Image 1 (spheres, one colour):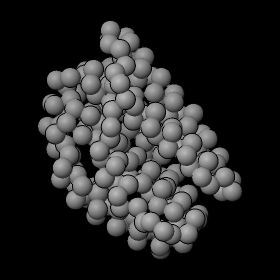
Image 2: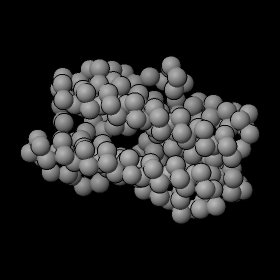
Image 3: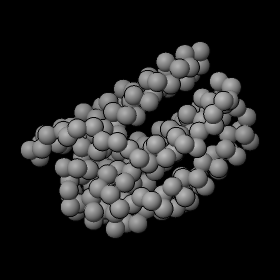
Length: 195
């Protein structure tokens, strides 16, 4: 599927589900941005010796929290309030595929590839929202975020390739893509970003 190489596309009808409850998708989206920032912070805490990774994750934290603020602004503008934090079963399913008991560089690559996978799927979902949602303001917003997520995906892959050989990273990325396609068979029916 294009530059992202996703193996399974989201059914565009997912947007129709989302449109029935805009407050829910906005709350879920806000928490997705917060979790992305938290995940970047945990990489900084876990792997401080990788200077370039720390630099990139620091920039990512700032950007994700700016996105959180912008989504929260939409929530307030529409007279909603931010709902409680949502679980993200999709991300939990991805984490089951992470290799255990590996050396630190390999573990960092695993975490970076999970980040790349989440960004790639979010990018695909934001593209669908930008093209199909019957809300001009949100359409423009999701188009902008789609481009941002594509940049994050590229950054995660590039960092992974700076830590382990490109051949290793590309092979492991393909394994992640295949696994994610099987996971996605369970999603696309919920009014959440990854649902």
